Image (cartoon, rainbow, N blue to C red; front, side):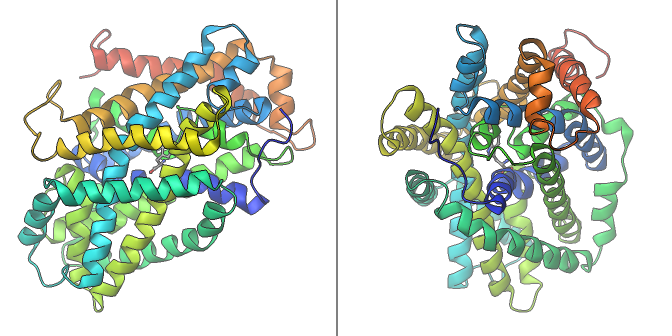
Length: 451
Ligand code: TRP
């Protein structure tokens, strides 16, 4: 395909990709997963998953996308015509809808908190009041749904105007600012009374906590946070230049993404212990911890204002990338206009978003496997569809792609070195798919090597 869209600049490539990876996954999902799965032991397994599974899968997605120059499903049709491998892409497009279905609800919450910061209603409350207020808001009907709609509309507007002008530009200002404010909040949190308990929770592993379900959660979080396993990075890398250094981008994105998650942990856990909040609080953890921290700071309202703006923007660069997976697929494979494709996607996402928001409130009793619709979307995507997609992506490239082609693409036809190519190829072909398979089988109880 010629004349395909590309990102506007080198910086745009890296910022858009980091923008996709860094989002609510780092600041909202990572801390609560860590809190629910025993703290430091989870962190350790998470980091192993990032290095052993995440990095090889990410490089492999970059290969597929830039080599094929197609969307998540089209890529497999182009590289293996007539085969069943394009199921990886369909799994990814479906996952994009499902993730957006709960992600936009949480993204909507950040807008509510941003408005509360502006109107000053975040100030002067006790820890218990923050918790009660969050629960009242998130289980309501109108407000959370309205914010979800606003967020989907924002995403939609940017996706239809193409990625280059909107998001690339915004990311350049916002990503450095996000780092800065996280660092400031870490310092504030670390100087709270009892901060040491939070740091111990985060960094002192209790190996007894490494259970089968904690491993599955850590693997799911690694895939979710790096935006891998569903073709998001296939889609983005199809917009990269032929000169882009894929290895370097993969390393930079992985490092930055992990750094942001760690900073979020350092910002949240000291506060959790200082304000005696339960680390296992679940989805509300960040939304009740942070307002408490801001309350302890001079000009707390200003800090919370800046923080929630940045969080909303970080969420937006991620929702765009999710939306783009589905939009690019509909647009290219069904040959309709970008605007029309994006509209179908947004409408589908809204339906899921409304149901998942209500499933935390008035539709709480309706559960499947003990999970609300919101949690079901989260569970099925992060813990099943993404690792499954990642496993298939590795199997596909390992089995169907000639090593020489793989190496040529990853070294830009031999113009840049790839010192660890054989290690990478070994991990991609054997270690990653086998490890993911093991974790699945163990969780299902089919093999039992761990409780
Ligand atoms: N990685 C993003 C975050 O951490 C969310 C996200 C964007 C994502 N694109 C994705 C998750 C693709 C899974 C797959 O917030």
